[in-house]
Each structure stands twice: as C-alpha cells, then as structure tokens.
Amino acid sequence: MAALASGPVVLAGEAWQDYGLVDSGHGRKLERYGGFRFVRPEPQAMWSPRLDPAGAQWHADAEFVPGSDEDGGGRWQFARNVPRDGWPLAWPNGEEQVRFTAQCTPFRHLGFFPDMAPVWNWMGDRVADRQGDAATLNLFGYTGVGSLALSRHGPVTHVDASKKSVAQAKENAALSGFGDRTIRWLVDDAAKFAAREVRREKRYDGIILDPPKFGRGPGGEVWRLEEHLPGLVADCRKLLDEDSRFLFLTVYAVRMSSLAIGGLLAELFADLPGIVEHGDLAVREEGEGGRLLPTAIFARWSNPG
Image (cartoon, rainbow, N blue to C red; front, top):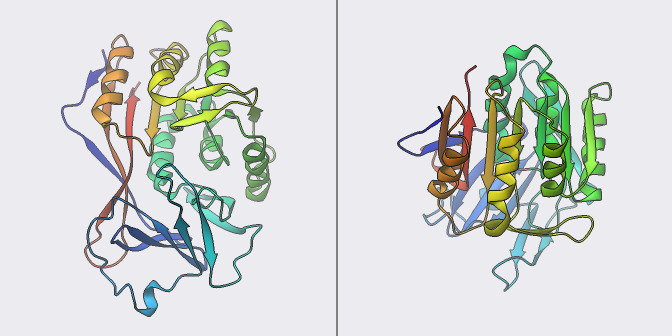
C-alpha cells in the first residue's frame, strides 16, 4: 500500500540551451529565454544577487513591474524589441525536441513554466516501459508543453478552461511536428471533466494536475484551491488503479505546505501500491554555487509496477 515518504524532496530543474536562471536576489530573478533576458519579481529570492544588479549582466530585454495588488497586476517594461507575438523555444525530450512559443503575458510569466522540466522527465520515466500505450491526463494543461512531452509515450487528454491556452497548445504541437500524435485538446472545466470521467469509468496510466489558486471554467464555474482540491484529487484517484504509474500535483502561489497536499494524497492513495512523496520544485542557478530558487510545492504518487 502507498506509504508517505518521511521527508520532503527537492526536484530541481537545470538549465538547458533555451532556458536558464542566470541570477536571483533582492526579490527578483534574471532569466534567459532563448536569445532574450527577462527580469521578474521573485519574493522567495531573499538573498543578494551573485552578479552586480547595476552591472551589464543584469541588463534585460524586458522587466515585469508588479502592481500594488499582492495577488497580481503589473506590466512589462521593454528595453528591446521583444516579439509581442512570441518566439520559438525548444526543450530536449530524450531524442526529440518539444518546440513551443514563449511570449510575455500579462500574468508575468512567459507562456510556459521551466521549473516543470524535471517533472516532465519524471513522468516520462514512469511510463517509458508502456511502449507507446500509456494513456495520460493533463488537467489545467495550459499551453501544452507537458502534454507534448507525454505524447511520446502514448495518447494524452489535455484539459484547460482557457480557449486561448488550448489554441496555443495546438500550435505548439504543430510547431513540434506532433500532428500525427493522439492528443485530445479539450476546453473544459477540469473538475467537471474529471467527475464525468469517473462516471464513465475511465482509467489512466498517469495524471498531472496544476490547479490555480483561483480560477473560472469556460461556463463560469468557480475554482477555489483550498475548497475544491480535495474533491478533484479524490476523483483523480478513481481514474487510477493498481496498474497505473503516477499522479503529480503542483501548487503555486499559496500559503500552504507540501505536507498538506502530501497528506491528502497519502490518505486517498492508501489502498494502492507505491509511494507518496512531497516537497519543493526549484530551479538551479547557472554559474558558481548553483543556488536553488524554490518555485512551487508538489506531491506525487508513483507505482513502479
């Protein structure tokens, strides 16, 4: 039966050709996305920058300046002509390249979450032995980089409430040359979709979910993380069985411990084999020292089969 691991795990992402965390400190971070550099707010960067923040190395092509609202707001200030409609990036997924468009969004991020790269690798490792038959579900799938990574291993169902995000995910699939792969692109409320799948007695080999703190479905459905997450994870558990391989849950921008979501998974997965782990997602800085910048908390269940 699934046991809760005794201590937290740190899952750290490393730099790759098209992305790197160059430096961080004093509440900001400096990143490179392809040929461009960006500065964004980062409250967890409580230390001092390694590089001189007044020097040339901290000069960025754009900086996101936050508003006064703790929960959001702000705008980009551009020093160079960054393409407003985005620019192509690639992430190496084994022997293939997952290609996608990065873009400066009003929500301070750039169209994908680079700290998820080790998660994509981890999920792929869990289902690699299924030889292309692993059926996976990506809830709150955003622009689809995780879905494209999973599509290497079998059919994927991608669900997001944003029509614009799903359209971008489809474009990323075309950019990657994955038009022949079995990916269902659905604009839907994630919680309602999962509940319907339970009624249909569907089963998946793996599920990833990245729920927001607050959101609305395409029909105006309201999502509040603390209120609705337990029910959604319970439904996800019903879509998995003793032959399934993983569930991965990430939570951003909330005052919550990974112990809380780890305990939730441990309770709901107690009747399945495997292990439940919890901890922090982080990105490792480039350069000397390689400091780890935490970005989110996670909990995961895995079954070696």
